[in-house]
Image (cartoon, rainbow, N blue to C red; front, side):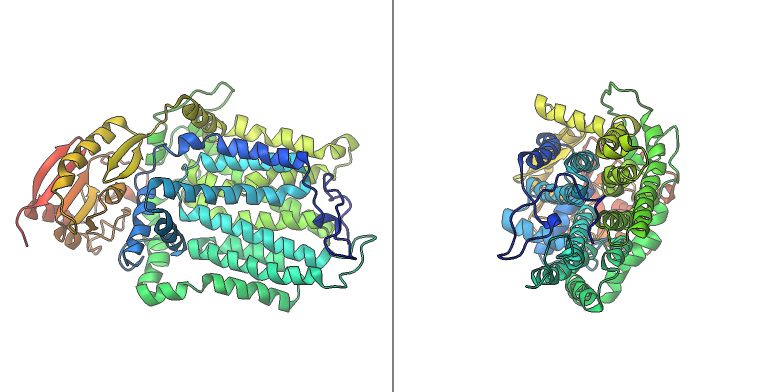
Length: 588
């Protein structure tokens, strides 16, 4: 049945898609200049900061290990068995294939990350499209502001998983619409030739496949993927649901390869035991965030450089506090409007989309709640907050005031635009404007560090100078195949690491599985890190993270055994600002 109130005003009839049969109105799309303009607007907003983002500072550990881990995979190493990795193998395998084709470089990594962000932005925009061009354009702009400002173009597994989940939802909803609406509109003949059924038969397993791949990237998106899939498949036949399930099974089947190579014990420990039971105490932050100051160490560092913003706004910690409550409110609003409209019009199309996206956003919420800093809040907000214009437009389209109902899209655009401009501008609009300005002025906040034909960008000029001098002087003394350990100056505390140094010294083998260092894990008495230090030929220990302070277990001191090995077996080979280099005193 046709949802007359929900039909987008800018969808217009187009020629039939098969001889002798008219396509449903929703499937007939004419790409006129207004549609193209809406896409171009989002492309411009998404693209303007890229010149800066490709040379912007990278998070030393997170971007470092997304460069190092896939290269280790190319060298035959297995995640969870040979190095600590807290998520599924999908992202590492995909990046390894990408690096195999393009070479290992920060540019290749950031291009991959850019593709993941584009998948989120334009995927949500496609879901919003039934509410009209203006609403979709605002959704795309919101998505661009949230994704490009969170952690740059770093190709993290979370962004890939969300992009795949959004694409899965879009394909699943498209398949559902072919099944339920094709041939049911007035003056449209029934699906006598089976075109709609054949298309749905292809889209349903494709949707399941993408959902499975999302779980291969990040198993913890299973709640969002599962809830949204239930809403997509509700009311379909068991045969149709089986097609989706077969696709999902194919998507997660590569886990069998991981279990066979890493071993079930190491795989389960790496993806479940470590991140859920060991990591939380050292990484969690207060809920809600503090009103007057930042709780996260990296957020405090980022706040040392604050661009100007001419519009009225609260202090940055105040905005983070408000964002913490705004996000679940938006999720509840999207889900509530979807539930209300589905109950009122069970066969209507737009309510179903709202319900599905609301459930996806609800399932992603744990990511924001476990560490509510601006990055984690943005990683979840990129779906429900970007979809907010559609939910507002849907609500306003059913109010009794004709002036509001007839201009629902315009009202939704005006209301939702207040969020990035006045509610959380310091983490969205202000950062975006700053990035665009940096690219325009060619004065980018990223200091290049180069060695062995590779480049990484740090956020401190003095530290980059010290690291460059260290690599220039010590690098030639390091022989290919020797083992390198990179860690904190005091190995009793391991809150973070300069993992990018492994990437810049590719001829050396990492001496530790803790390329990513986490409090309460690497510094545990039973972590084995002391033995790994003892196996190294070279140590690079950093004082940069000595001042790490968060209200969690990262303040606790762990085992002193690794420090004892340093004092016993290693001799100083140079001090370069915050970096101390050690070499094994005697050969083994």
